Image 1 (cartoon, rainbow over the protein chains, first blue to last red):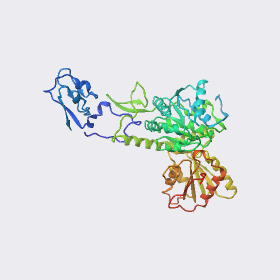
Image 2: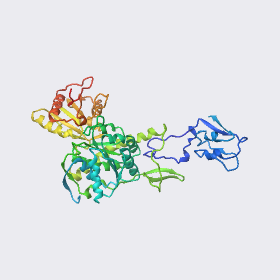
Image 3: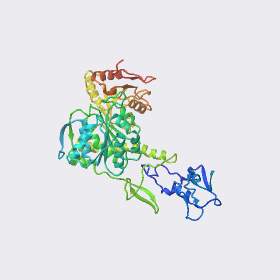
Image 4: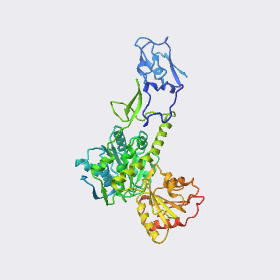
Length: 91
Length: 410
């Protein structure tokens, strides 16, 4: 992820964040990424419910989607999926 | 009380409490520890008697004392705390957090030896250990200066060019519990000198682009202080603190000068306080109350025809290395008094700083180091005299620094 880094004169003092929270793409911390198998998925929504980063979106009907900009790859969704439809794949 | 200028017979702790009251601190958060306790006791009395409108937060530890002062300061309050020795040690984690989130808390540190063995008397090992925590450190010589330095500390720390916490130190018992005639400004003069705390504004992004918000915790303009930095921005934030310390030289000088005009009292150039050094051969450098004794010894030795002088270092952080170079070049020898040990190092902290400052000079004087007074061990004029005479006889810099321990029994 190419990020332009600012110099010390260009950022606020006191460690005050200078970007909106959504601009901090924490997905680049990830080592394994969850991949949802739409064939196996029973659309129960458990992964969406358990995701601690709200990085899984779900419309209540279809297959949930992972937002890889913010998914840190913790694997909770894969662990909770009752039908083993989520595989953790090395980046 | 405080309607007009007065001279009060008070000790150093009470002098600090007077200054904090006149600066109209909003929050006092502290935990009792000898020899600091009197400061907070007096402030509690001022609040009770209606002479100070402040919130007194009684906490369960020094870690909480500084944490509460920090939160109050970030919320825009003028926050004050005081501690000593082990209390300062317990604040350790928060010292760095206060400095790096640029909260201008003012703290009186009544210098006391660190345990073990437990000891309540003066040495500088507590505040010297905190010298790299990002706080400005001003060392006073007597109760009058404890008062003057505390008033100045608020102005220095809160200045937009600085925004750093300030530690005002006074020697435990020697200053904190010794009665002295202290000249007190009127409440009005003192408060108009310190002024209302101004909150600087910073630019942060929002969904429409950029907006300006006050640098404080304010629900109307929410910001957070010091969340995660990794290897990407931590160094940049430290660089800002380094720069703030650098800028504080100018502010300390301005505030000292302005205070001198108001009160008629000044301490050298605000950083170094020289005494009879003009034609001196040997000069002794040190901190705190010992330097009052040193002046007496200088006078005695001058009577005997010995050309000696002394320099008291008032501001240790930022360290006035440039002024040290200007002041100490050209003497035949310099002695440095440290009231704290830096275990495993060659000499004490002040010795390191002074010798390092002089290193680049072509005609640098040889420097001897003396570690003295640990745990309140007395430094009588007789012992100081021996040090002056030894420095006077020093002609060249030994390859390995000469460090001695005057006052310790063999």
